[in-house]
Image (cartoon, rainbow, N blue to C red; front, side, top):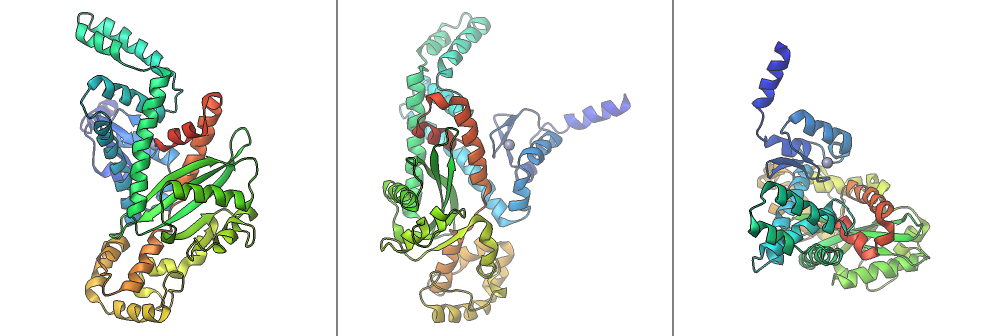
Length: 402
Ligand SMILES: [Zn+2]
């Protein structure tokens, strides 16, 4: 008995959301609940043990890929947080005239998409709202009228989701236009009906070292998946997003011949195409081989001064001299303690042009793979649940709402 009471008392004292849970479990406080930034699950009790269980059961990988106390983890956290913030700004943008009924229907559509529910759930939800109001506020005619005006037909929900997706997409395209460098990660897989599809992720870095990683597109490949088909699909996506090819630093793929083949594979074909700059290509599992360059990125004071080769730098001799000079820079050295992104942000481009360019290129390349993996498990789920009603566009839209 006493133990039980003590426990309850302990819990009562912890009814507030503790900021440390953000970094520890990737949860933030939202509307009085704890929101998982990875999968959007809401947990209504502010209890460390619940959040911890959720995190350890479902997202244990994050601790491995983005260990606690690292800058990468901080960055991931702030990216995810800003996405949530962006969402509320987006709703304002979509309903400029402040029509609350329209805003409400956007929010319902958003929830439908986020929960990967079929679009026709809108009508069902509307009926539920009406019944709830009828029971809880039978005299509130204004509220009843508003619910009645709420447009939630399948068609409206579809349009709303497309609107939201367009805003997300144009933001992404603007970011890609403004970035210093980007790399892409490609994943070819089959959907539930065994049709091949290609997911393209972009990872970009801005001149001031802000890194973003997003799903750029997901395209159905017509029955064949030769290197040339993949290249064509990828190039079309680049063009649609108005991306400048010369900012491409790396193509990351799996090991399939259609991807890495040196003649007819995607990589070989792109290397032989003048529209493409010199770029790196590596497989997800080969990151280890890039250790000297990763050392340069994380700890330039302990890297070999000659670790920078083309295409990372255009002038290898000049970059070696810059490396030697950089090593003597005590002011910069002391900044490294605050993390390598902070460090590189502070490195002046005028003084260290080659080295700084190389660092930006490397920052645009290396990323965690859990984003891709998460996407593919969601993809299976979405397709298996609603395969009959989904077009490729819808799949992409549903996947973007993470
Ligand atoms: Zn979660």
